[in-house]
Image 1: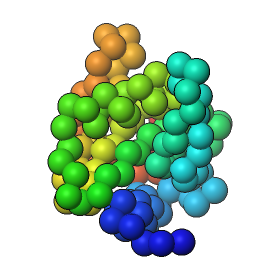
Image 2 (image 1 turned 90 degrees about the vertical axis):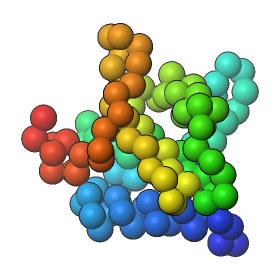
Image 3 (image 1 turned 135 degrees about the vertical axis):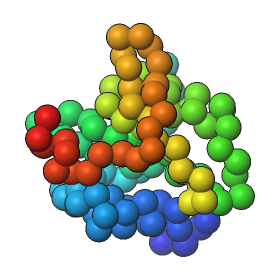
Image 4 (image 1 turned 180 degrees about the vertical axis):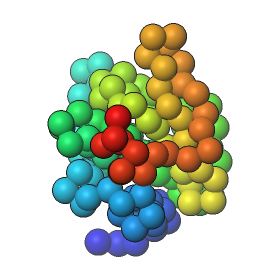
Length: 122
């Protein structure tokens, strides 16, 4: 595998999820396809709950890519299908964490995503 700038970011996010947030490796899925409006897209990382539902969708960009509304629109489209509770968008330098508010059809920015222990307590 070639270590592209985006892959470098993805590997650091995986390390963060496993080492810092204590998510089990078995709950993490990388670069899988999903069908969205008759097209096939690829998400970067998803983290599953113990019950198999998706807890977090993560979009990784190369460090030179600015995080903007278009980036959030991309992950929001993915989440229309995936229905994750949390979103994380990062370019390795800037990190944005959001919790979904499905009832009001918006996301709420957070300082961080929950650790694995916090997700199993709820």
